[in-house]
Length: 358
Image (cartoon, rainbow, N blue to C red; front, side, top):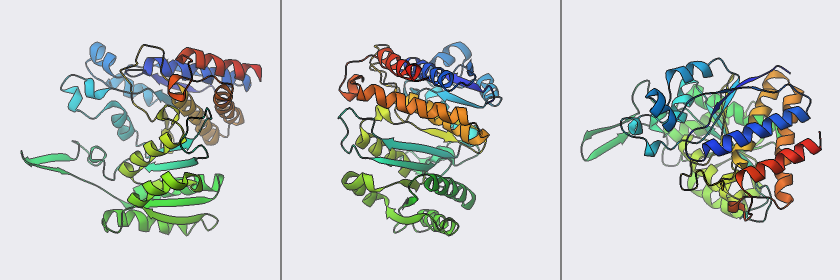
């Protein structure tokens, strides 16, 4: 295994609590796997970066990220930034756009603890991350939203063959490694040209994956199906906004947004980012659930292992997930999962479990 260089961007709110927790767990898992430790590089981002550098995403941070193998991104609270920063593209969106991180992979799987609405949920939502109905991803400059008059607001939705083909291939490759079932979610019955193009191209790509069972579902029906039979889904591929909404729903079904991890990836870069927000109401209190950030870091380790053929990084990823689940099964969890553990207390339990099995 190479000695990877990874960025650490703690962000806002609970970020300075959960991101260091993930760093601790990654280091423990790599040590247990007999691998070199990470060269971590802490970089400014968010409210603290505005105060120190005059930008929520300093140019020096973007330049440094380009030299790294990947990075951990904490949540940001861009709604609380002063103007003009509040109205600008938020830091995570700017990073995704700059590095063309086109695949947002969001698993939904319970960790135990008895708080899940649908505890047998085990699916992955593959979200196209660069266009669709998120207007801020659809233009070279500007945000893709505009107002020709004070009473009219317009947003652009963009769908292109290259972007759909590559996210479809990503989803099918993932389905091949899982239970070989893929569901395309769309709204082609109403949005016949845009969402219809997404559905049609995904079905074209499906012809090159005859070993994967494929179906398609309208977005409105999919919300009902997730509530009633989440366990019947394996890999779900959809456009940007639909994927964002469905992954939040799936995360809650599996137990809590506090356990919902994700990565944003291109062909050569990967960013680990929990699906939840910055939770400023509990920031600094030690109550934050670090599971989503820890599992996101584990996904980054798995991505590095796959990309570089690195068995030890892949082994570390498994140890991270096993350690989280073991801690929860052992009765240690944060308040949102019904427990009493602090952020540090839960992280200690995961690190101790991993170290004990090295």
